[in-house]
Length: 496
Ligand code: NAD
Image (cartoon, rainbow, N blue to C red):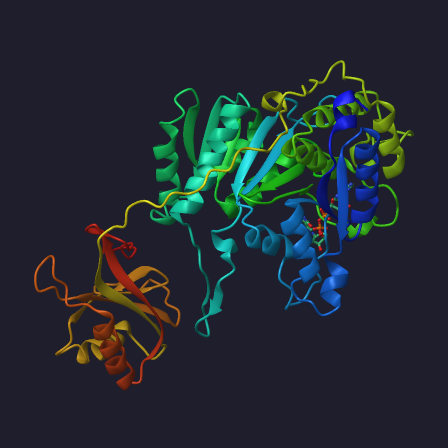
């Protein structure tokens, strides 16, 4: 124990041992933290499978939330989400409820001590953690069609992009790559890309680039050493961070931090590994890396560096659990033996792998950045200019639908502009080759008195819907169409 750690007050943290291999790797991790002199006071909560199966569909009890809100620091082992419907993912619930908007996952190669085709990987994925398709707003709308809403907000984009740039600046990283699919999702992913470009000007010393996620993922799989910091929306980040971690040699090695304005959660990236549970062979390194990030987060940089360097040293000297051992290696260690191997090397530094410094700016696996509060931009002038009405309809040719809708428009403030099916324009002038489901969208534009004065109102939409219902049509949802400062807030139909 160093003199600075001996005098430090203990920081309360919330600890969950989790399911499957969770208790084995948490015990190993806490034993290393204890031996290294981490000044922490763990409060243990129970979450996961047993809580789910006791009838709590969220997998977490009220008392656990109290602990998390009190300590604001969470070290969590993996949990098992029971299969079958009715159980919400606890990880997503915790991240979103506590506003843990940034998922930070460093991916580093440890060649030649861990086998990998890419010995020079040293990158950090900064994944947006709260929105996108993970909003979990899903509906079945017709016999044929199910919907999942993708929500991207300006505050969400600004928080994560700012976090990525601040992380890069603080850690002396040279480049931030933004990945989106804004060639297709021009509004939602387009906003993420736009915010990235807006914020880049505040960081002139950092090189920036944007890649479409498909080619970005391909490049990551082929030349991961070209990446430094990558910032990306939730779903792409989920996928690409597993790709990156796997390329380093084992998903059992990587930890991740989930950072919010108030609370932070630290974990391994892998799951509860039911196939090896109880065998005592799991690699505790992923959770240990999560714990090292936690120690940086609570300001115990010296302990974080001590543990990390001892771990690197152990790796160099051949201490391996089964998942990273070479074939035929007779000296494979159990989880507890591996923990002891790390403890035995506390105070030593690696000779070939890069040692970690106790300075927060140089602690390559630190995830901690000061969170900045979001400032709302001035409100735009918002005008309602029409409505998209979606129908469940499977009665015949699209002209019939157009005729039925048009038949009730006399005397209303709307005109039928187009009909689409799964986003592609099928009326007017559709192609017979286009495959159509039973899910149709009619775009009804307000007939403006003048450019600035639309007659389209909530009341006129209600009147329109009443008339449409009178024809027997089954409208399943509407989307109001707005302009913001004169700019359309809706996409064209494909082929429009
Ligand atoms: P998994 O990550 O648990 O296992 C995938 C493979 O990697 C298995 O072969 C496993 O033995 C191996 N593995 C994982 N961690 C290892 C370690 N530390 N040491 C050695 N080998 C390791 O993924 P899965 O099997 O798809 O999921 C199992 C359960 O975990 C599911 O219920 C899933 O919902 C849950 N899960 C939880 C989290 C989390 O809590 N953060 C994350 C992912 C999956």
